[in-house]
Image 1 (cartoon, rainbow, N blue to C red):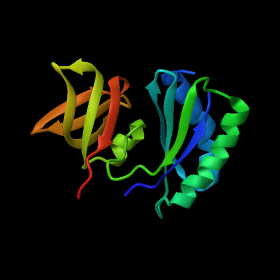
Image 2: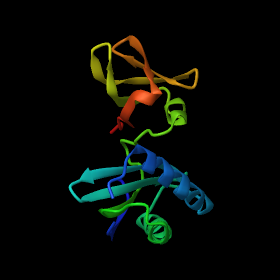
Image 3: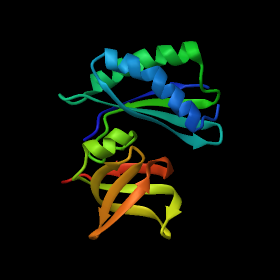
Length: 166
């Protein structure tokens, strides 16, 4: 089960560059509180969205942890005002289907099953589900799908997450 906390905010469309900026803005705050910033994503259009911030730590993440991080990040967002459209701030643990954001995540979780969706197709496909094999040359994510090895460009990955074991 995944812990999460939602806070409501009013504020513009944000793209990949803005998500990177928010990640850089949030990371020192989250780490200073003893958590790992797993990643940041923004979803939504039509004037309203969700800014989702994933946090983790070895002992797990509780609702109180999410609320504490939400309080700190809300203050930063109020001062910096990086988003100009209406949005909800959601703080969440990564959960069983942990999203993979950083290149290091693909190395860290080598041996685990993951789903990867590419923004640009490779060999006639965009979706891959298989066992992560790590990283090569700091730019390729290696995954084995049904006994076949694929080297996927990290820069082309639109979304990736672990497939939870239940």
